[in-house]
Image (cartoon, rainbow, N blue to C red; front, side, top):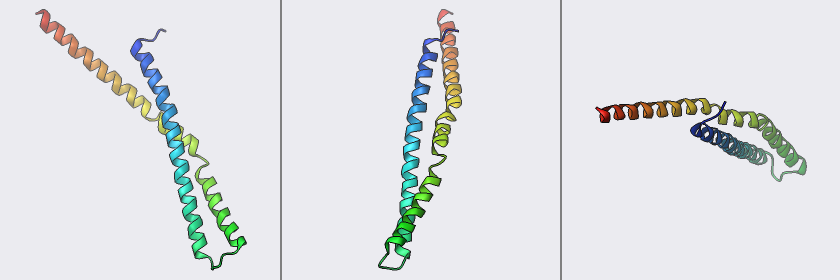
Length: 114
């Protein structure tokens, strides 16, 4: 099966979309997870008795690291899903736009020839 020019263009755009959106979504999710972990760490530090001991600081750091690891475990599958889910809708919408455009142009050619 041979693909037309617009179909090849659509495939290239789809691949670029998946790659770019996956990378952006993964990066943003990792930054958000880091922010949550940092907030938990600061809260833990401020709620412990001052002056803080090395053991308490290690405990707070371990809790924050554990949260970050749990928070980012399913980040890649979620990022890929965020990129793939809109694709069928985009293909359907573009197909409908092209079909409507062809229908309008066919009508104009008929009016001109009459």
